[in-house]
Figure 1 (cartoon, helix red, strand yellow):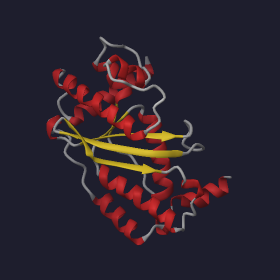
Figure 2: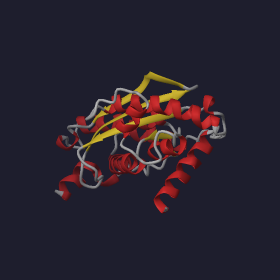
Figure 3: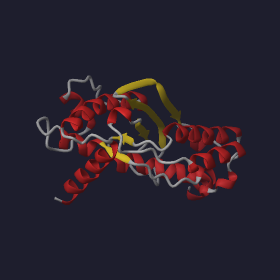
Length: 227
């Protein structure tokens, strides 16, 4: 099984990529990080979620990725990307289908650019993305993460002091959560709505830039993990 996976996932060999993907990858690597000391209104955030077959990036499969933008405080559903990876393991990585997957993943990186990324449980989402992007494109994916799992109780202590499943937060804010959601884009749009509210509360607390929000996310995670 390990040998098959190594074949399917290329072992992170970028020289095996199609020429157009390699060229796009080089361009993406050379892009500068955006300034993160601008007000939230001027920052492009990318909210994303994934669907997987389990919880372990090393052995379970990433089935889909969805991402959408929040900019100027507004969700832009038309400015989104969705990648279906359900049949990835059935594809020969050297086939046209395999090359199409690499192009989709490259399109995801181009969409994300170097924007701060927002999700729920970075260790889970980031772990799967890191594993797949390293294996397929040779990319060490280390973006600036904002983890709503830790930030929501820090910002909205009146609703809960504790880390909760996402559905419970959606219920707490009066959103129809639909327990058992399995659609990555639906999840992402729900997260984006929560993130809009979080940005307003962050501004009230003078956490008024992406950099401060990233630092608050890291601090909240550290404090809860160590106390």
